[in-house]
Amino acid sequence: MSFAFLGANASAQSLEIWNAGTGRMSYIVETTPAWLSAIPPFGFSDGPASRTAHQIGYDSDRLPVGDHAGTITIVDVAARNNPSTVPVSLKVGWVRVVWPIGGESWLVGALHAIVWESRGPCDRVDIYLRRPGESRYLGSAPNRECLNFWWVRLPQDLTSANDWTVWVCWSSCPEVIRSHSGAIRVTPAPTVKVTWPAAGTSWPAGKAGKVTWTCSNFPDAGKLYAILWKDWFSLRYLGQMPFRNGANSHPIHLPKDVPRGSGYRLILFWGEDLSIFGTSEGFEVR
Image (cartoon, rainbow, N blue to C red; front, side, top):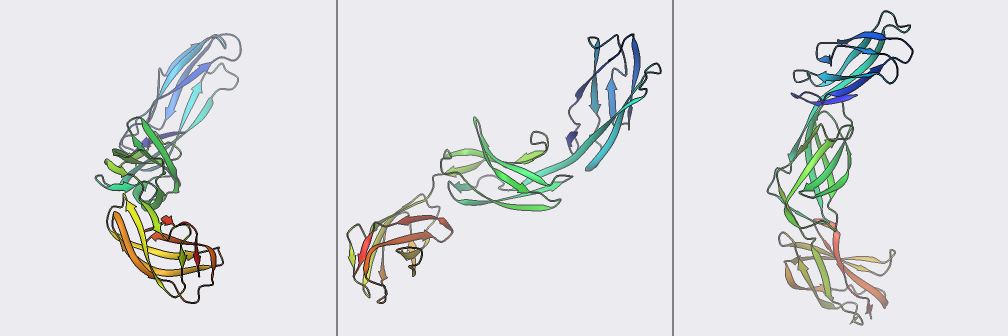
């Protein structure tokens, strides 16, 4: 099976032919349809050690998107298996990355949308992030003959640089039918560090406390969601708090009906991506 990007010729292949029996085999190579060719179109073989290599060419630059079939027929009237026919399959298609277009700034560890358009017989694509000397596989996604949309999460250990490109490649031929975005900037993962309540804090139920924390590497100011956590059966939403990069503080009222005890933690989630959060040390509610 061969593949071609729409408007381009598929890569040539090599076909070796030889006589598996004895005596001289003199043959010709016939190809159909017209976009398929064999050079040279004939050959000789005196046995398994006498082989002729033929270049199989694909003049596919004018073929439409889709599946195309052809045949290679080896003809020697003296051969017992004359003629011998080999089927040929050629798939023509194209893909184009629509988003990102280049110039965007993406956060390590965060979710990001990728949009691409595709035409041709392909049901899956592979997605990569690449820069000179580095390539990271971001996953596989379903592909349809239309505009496609998929979310990817950037790995936490990704190098911060401004020359990354997003690649979308047909899974069946990733080096042939593929497309990439313009250069994007990858920046360090945002971080949230809760500094109060601290370890050993005793927070009275029904009272407000001044929660403090620091943020770094966020693209813009935003909101954090505050959750009181002790175990998966004791979760309490405490509200939203505005933040910016740097030191932050905001009062939070602890509900009066929170059961007294130790082992509580305050978790602050980023409103745009709940996988980015900060957790306080354990404290007591009294």
